[in-house]
Length: 366
Image (cartoon, rainbow, N blue to C red; front, side):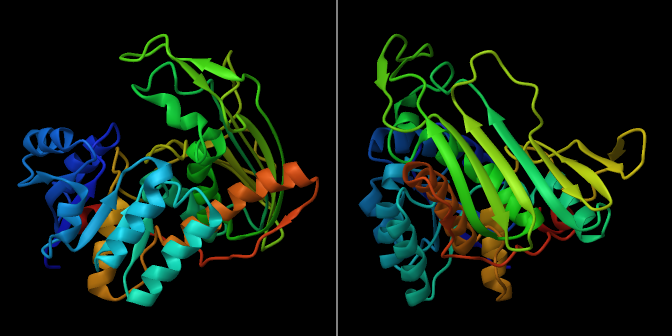
């Protein structure tokens, strides 16, 4: 595969792992980075040996850039994605795909019209932990999937993130921030979603930042911070998901469990790439640890970009696709709509279940 020249837009907290990992992925070359704060872009460029740190407009005008990684805040995702697509560049965006369904559709449709690719985080489901879980399900270890549970129970990001305000604005909250990890993993393992229901609440009208450098600042909360949802998958399985920033004393709930006619699978934290994976067969007394069958078990953020670049070269669908991201985005809105309107939300979108990763992808692609 010939090199794909990458431009990164958004040089904030999450960008460091993308800079680091893209340097190790065969066929990817980060040639420029940009930020609204050009000085920050230049500092990141110097830190990671990138040839050019510049403005967003300058990066988008560069004809040598093939693919843009969009790491801006959620409120800017759609604008930057559309600008990149209109500049003739493939785009891979941090989750969520967009704040609104309308913007998400616009991104996917624009890419299709221009013959370009859209990819979207999270790509943690491409790691060894969830890919091992997907393989076990496909190989029939738990029989027919009949149910699933997923829990992200936390106390919010204001105690550790250097600039946490956007987590409590439109496009934030626990479902839009962390829900994509859990829902993407569930769709990869169980399949697309037919309909959802939900209830939401906001426990605290304001949050006080206890992390540097904004210690003591107050954030007004504009979004629900506890979201409980039900999912009916297209194959008939029923799922439960709770995402919360209101759990102040901790939780012992599992991250994800998938229940089948012949057994149960404990799926690892979908915000990570590794294990552990555990299985319990119907009638068994104990859980069994399952060795991971796939690679990319460390922090491999950006592997979705690598898969997309390889998919372009190989003329095949990429796994962390815009269609998958839009399906997840619609489901997240569906939970909120169902709560507001007191009814089920019928999904309008669907998506192809992503093809499993090759078991030796890490040795082939690095």
